[in-house]
Image 1 (cartoon, helix red, strand yellow):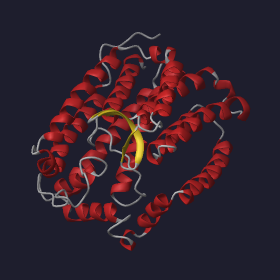
Image 2 (cartoon, helix red, strand yellow):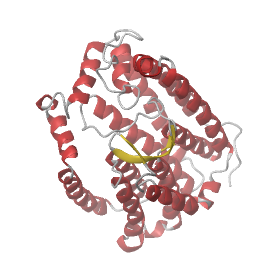
Image 3 (tube, one colour):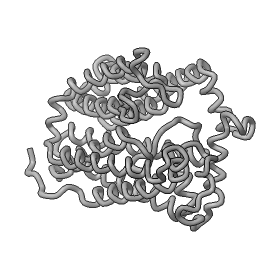
Image 4 (spheres, one colour):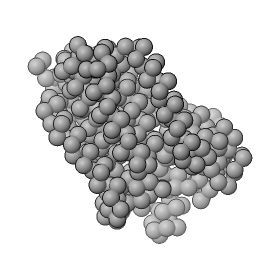
Length: 365
């Protein structure tokens, strides 16, 4: 094991800190009216977000100090636990239903989303599997099928909730990791064709998914139904212009855009801070992606390289999908924006993941 450096990658750390600060500020601005109406406290969501940021920072610091090899040793145990949670959450009366998906476990306002934990567990397990079976990555029988088999088993359980957005991010991240590990391009082309057929089947099998596709193509066909969210999001972004309406001056957060502090927080940010504010956030994600790639390339071994690449890819894919949905380039998926959207388990898990990458950076060349 290479000698550990005294400091992690400070550029990544600063970019994460700026994203978290922006997130807390925007959660307050986006949620103040809704929080005042529902809880008689305009700081309700902001205080909770600040609390989770604090927990997340502590968790990030802990994982930053924990040798990344520990995750390799515990990868199977973590995966078994997450599979168990995905099964438990499907039990009627146990899993909590929110937004039409039975994907939460907990009591009252404090809950966790097992699918978020599965994303991280799958990255750790796949990094271990691919690093140990690197010479078989180009084969179908001993490389592609075993690695993707476990991924699609988890995807199937997530789809039973159903939660297509989280499942798609997990699958996209894992496919990227297999490709980076040396998977054949021809295999991925075949897999892509099969995936498109499967995706079409999933869309056809559930009318609400077809509604999301049609509303994505023309949201004004059903402006009060399936197209409502994207229309309200575009109504928020358009007036923002270059400089925005000013902090706290959003109009769409006043009960037009449903719960704007979660999936559509970027809409409120663009409305209040304009193109410049939105570009600032995108640049911060770009910096995080750049540093993550550098850390992965300089990692001391294949496992840590795949681990850093997987976490970085997961954050990049999730951020890209969320912003793509908000600006109307992709169908609505229910994916949060990392570091910015209001949430407990998702924010904490993202910061734990960043802590792992920062630990790898302390060993990187």
